[in-house]
Image (cartoon, rainbow, N blue to C red; front, side):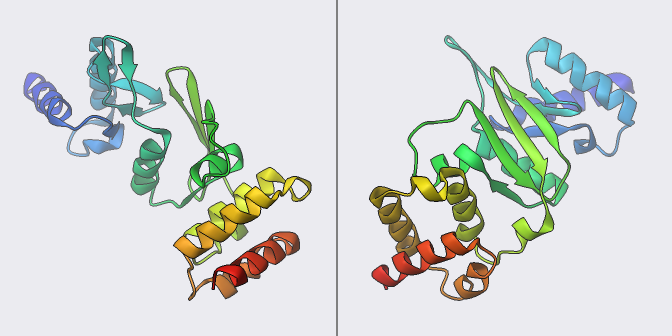
Length: 201
């Protein structure tokens, strides 16, 4: 029986696509302690890699070392499993929205789920439980845009930043939600968005 469970779980993991995240709860038919033991065993074999307690990912072995999926891909899968919302914050938000070309070594997100850290090789992904007001936005662009602009800071807003805001708003106008979302933003960000939104409409 144990061998058949082992082979069954091994088969699922072996056939999974690169970047698939596995949790102990991914195999609800089987005993939790036994699944935990098996996942630890498969980790030793190099079939999967542990990135947090009870969280594993299917990686690729290359001649340059282990290849991991992107932070964003991992965070999306974990958020889906936890039925949580996530928003990039700090330099992570700046990079994702094109305000910075610098790819941060450590990436940060706010989440409605649990606070946790994921270790991906020499990188760290931090998921921090955020206040409900951060998730009250109705649009998809606005929460990340507010986080990016907060990270840049009011005193560091340049013409280039203004142009990028205008470009993002013209790409994703969110006309049905923007008025609601503007009221949630800090006053200086609200003013910045309004003047750049006008120039693109």
